[in-house]
Length: 233
Image (cartoon, rainbow, N blue to C red; front, side, top):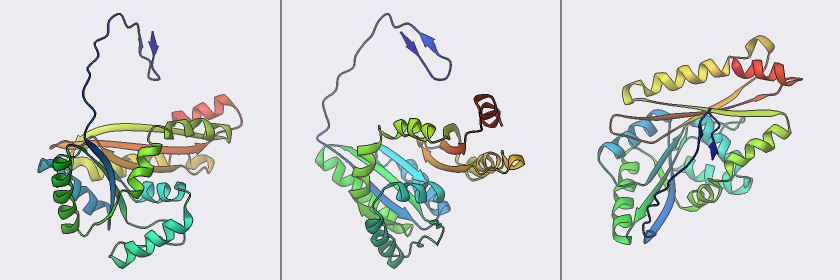
């Protein structure tokens, strides 16, 4: 019997299991683009050219800064910032943000397939003034990808609500949709002088569009009812 977080209730009466062999190779990589617009154009070209990547995720500038902060390796991040700056990608300012966006991608298959896909992807990244940095951050993402949802409970324990929303639109609508969503969320609690931390990444890429996945965090109020009203805004 299953109960979902979005109102789904079901009873499983029969199951078919599909078994496939483990891939010969699977790795996750990270690159940085100078800004969000270039990142969107690059990832759109990758998917429309049919490059065989098994996972793609483009973080906007706020999510990029948030992930680098949460990485917990201040010295390593400083060296990364210097390297990216030398390669033409903007450094973070005093508040920890810049225009740079992080592109995380995976390649799965035989060694020959992975080698070919990586070569083509690296070339496209370079054509858009992006900087490929290898597997270090990719391994970090892989290690924590199924642990991140459990951070929600930790945030709750210190009085922070974390929630997400997702929608899929055509490529032409992506920039304005992201801007509208983030603006609406970030200003939702202005009347009570509360700040909402909001950021977005693109995922589930298709030839005609992609999924916009937005995360936001805000402080709990003094009791459940008032906190619920904040969430409903």
